[in-house]
Image 1 (cartoon, rainbow, N blue to C red):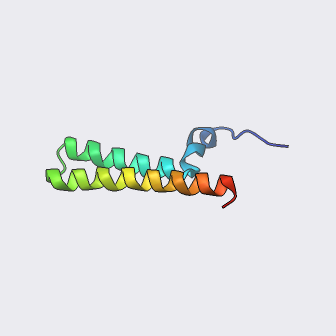
Image 2 (cartoon, helix red, strand yellow; image 1 turned 90 degrees about the horizontal axis):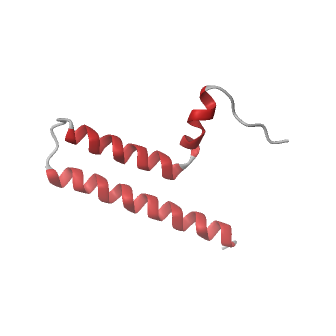
Length: 69
C-alpha cells in the first residue's frame, strides 16, 4: 500500500529528486547574486552552466536506467 506523505513531508517530498535539488541550488545562487551577493558575471554564468549540465546529465542517466542499459 502506497501512503501519501502528510504534513510538511508533503511539501518537501520533491526535494528527494536530484534534479530538483540541483535546480533549487542554481535558482538560489542566481537570486542571491541578483540580490547583491558579491559575485561577478562569469561566476553566475558558470553556476548556471554547471546547474544545467548537471540536470541534463542526471536526466540522461535516469533515461538510461529506465531503458535497462
